[in-house]
Figure 1 (cartoon, rainbow, N blue to C red):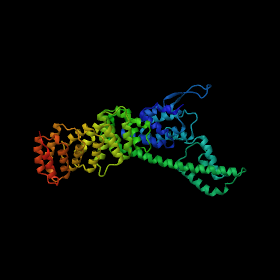
Figure 2 (figure 1 turned 90 degrees about the vertical axis):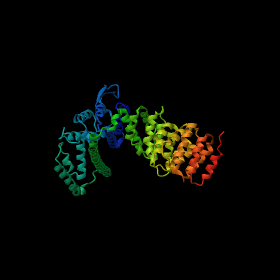
Figure 3 (figure 1 turned 90 degrees about the horizontal axis):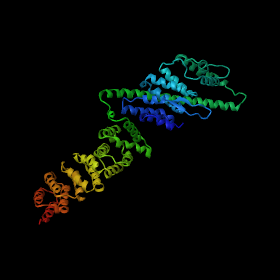
Length: 510
């Protein structure tokens, strides 16, 4: 049967773990990483659904017509490496699993007619940890026979000892006795190495003996690495549990507001954002969950993904995935994502924006212009300490992405804030783009010019902006505007003062 079909029988959270366990030799590490992230997202996460599905009976089709249909637990239908990874994973997290659940999985695995020695050893190790069967040896009779032969080859054919004595019976020795046996083996290796000779097959037996020794060394090295890895991961699991316990008591998990399928999608998106590989179409489809979220859920999702901390090189890929969604995001969803993803990055700029950031900002602004104005441009303008780097980026948006309607909207935003040199350059850029100002808006603007002019008496930027108003918008200037502006120009102390007064004087009214 197709293993891929089995995966689809699990719920979303369990499916992530099953795929990790199917990913080869690194499956245990990946599954543990996924489980840790699920725990951080939801401290109350449980593995019960995964274990129950694995223990579910399934009808298997025979390989030939002569064989009858059989019923086996689903876990027995997976490949051996998956079972080995599953048992190693359970060994590491068995402290958070109910004992009855673990024993049920082990009972299902015992129905496998041809278990591998590794699986048998891992099953018995788990049983021993649970004190279900603490006297049955970890090794199988076949394994015992092979190791006895191996110990005889290593220690010499004439005597038996060391490992041969360890595996001469199917009982588990105390640790002290095992240690003395291993010590004896080391002594015998030194003493008996001169007795190892070739038998009648000569060279062939010698090569076989070399291969056996190489295999032993390799397996010892791998076992040592696996043991150190298990210890390291187990310590990490305990540390995570200890660190997360106080947080769980102090405050409810924010992800409680999310349905199960959204939680699963959040984990998938997080893995995608952390990966260094290219995103395919299947990967980008996970972002469709954004259209299933209400405003509160989108905010929780953004917090869980830590979007403000996302590296800038990831922004273009994320932006492309979001912009590819159909239908388009709602206004509130787009605004929440833009604010979470981009606002802090723009406000913290101390040098010109990177290409990745500029590309992302302009792409979002072209597609979601109104949310961009309210979620990014407006809050940046309201920030008191914005500098030339922020102004330069906003001017790019004004010139390249905003049509006349949205330029007017941004201009109106400047009426509600205290102007600075950076804001002056943005207003100047807006005026240069010649938005279609009606009489009411122009009156509001001239009022702002008069009110804010006292702090810019020596500002060349302010004087240039005034000159733009008097030359490009002369048709909008009424007698009342002219009187107010004349009083404003009397305060100007820049070298452009005479040019400004002359431009105002040229404006006539019929």
